[in-house]
Length: 101
Image (cartoon, rainbow, N blue to C red; front, top):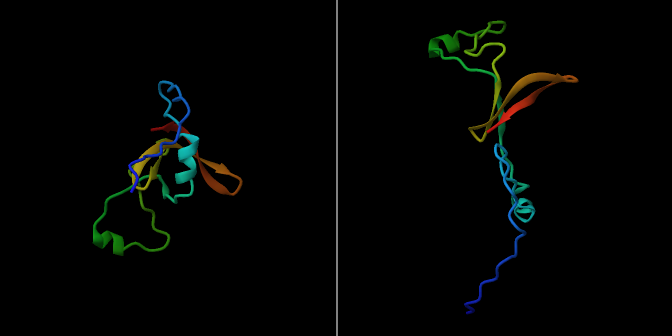
């Protein structure tokens, strides 16, 4: 059994700019870049009873607790990571990011 430990040499650390998150080192990114995550756009939420939930029918309107001009919240695996506004890109919805946490 060998007591030798092999270390990889990293480039000099990148200078962090205030307000900007540090970037992952390129050598580390190839190790995690393929990992699947869930990114969810949360437009708003509401609270209702189970009776109200089961009484819902097609065509009913469910009022959310957010105002029309409130930012959409992006959650990565359940954690808020960004905010932005809802926009249309061709025939799809998209999020124009205004804040990355």
